[in-house]
Length: 145
Image (tube, rainbow, N blue to C red; front, side, top):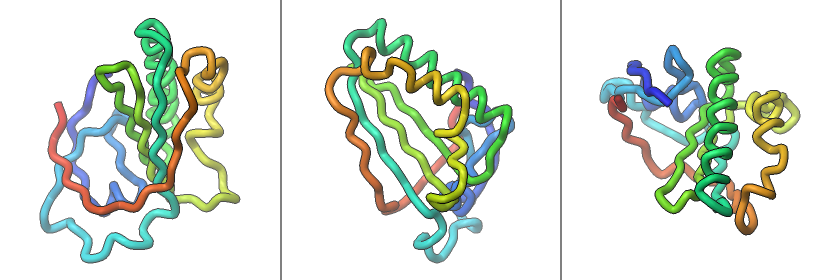
């Protein structure tokens, strides 16, 4: 996946509005944009980790994750920010910032691409999924090219 360059503020990331023209992470943090308080700006932050059964399973998982990002880039929801990392051991870490309540539509989980990602996920995965709510301690983002 390519990363697009974009200027944004830490407040936009924390508020769940981190987007670039292509829907991918690639902002620049401007010191003057740094908010004084980070609490209460996002309803939920989730970190999800899991392993995959093989590099082939990881490749398929990555293709499906890329499909989710393609759909998010097309629909451009403004209530969620989403980052997925593939680690060198072929495990994955998903980090999501949600600026919607539990009774509102989750733009990630409600997408057709995410449903495709979830389909047969257990056959690609090794072990259980570890998903936890997370507290934001701090953020520093620079241009990612």
